[in-house]
Amino acid sequence: MEYGKIKQGTIIHGLRSNQYPNRECSAIIITAECDIAQCKVSKFYYLSAMDVRTWMDTDGLDYTTANLQLAKFKTFINNFSGKIPELKQYQNVAVVDLDKIESDIRNLPDPIDTSPALKELSKIKMYRAQTKDVLGNLKRVINGDLTHYFFLPYNTYTAKNQKELKPKDFCEGLVVNLLDIGFFDSATVSMIERQDMDFAKLSETDREQYGKQFFLEKSGDMIFPEEAIKPPYRELLMQSFSFAFIRIGVDFNSTNAKNYWDKEFPNTEMP
Image (cartoon, rainbow, N blue to C red; front, side, top):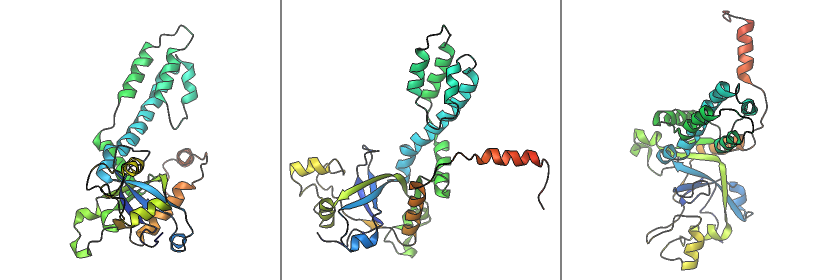
């Protein structure tokens, strides 16, 4: 195999991610540069990424909707847990399965009138986030506040000369999902590097096989290393990935702590 073309930070467009099978994604190689250079790897790991506008219509929309539904569900619990005590077990959940909860309510043995609760739950299930809500979360991604996403502006990986860049090149780009990890085997990488991952060159069998990994659907479709992230943005991405991937969960509630100290020293200004 010929090494050296694909490296850490290489961007390969046309990926078909398992998490987003019907949307064209990009693969960003994260395998260590030194391991690739020394031919030590049989698998090239990558993170999936989406064009920022595609992200807003798909993953960003789903993520925002789920969080808003959760907030509405917490209000729902407060309103109905008096009549349906079983709902209290969901007070502190971070993810909620609304279909299962609806089924549980319908199967309650006690003669409780659950119709008002089911009607309200149906509204929550039908709710979808608005563009302004998704935009708010995109801003959080850009700020680094949503730690499982990373915003990669176009200017950080384009081959354009700095003088050719336009203001939008610093605002458009890719949203990387730091928790959506996949890999290419060495044979696949070799084909990509040789520019043999080409619909016109592939046999019917290969088209079926590689069509599960890439968008190779018609003549002219081709997968090859198109761009690479420039330092130090590549290192920043890897640092963010490490933080998101190995983050340790704790039960410390910073909001409660801050509220506590506000009550301890009400109306007091620090020097």
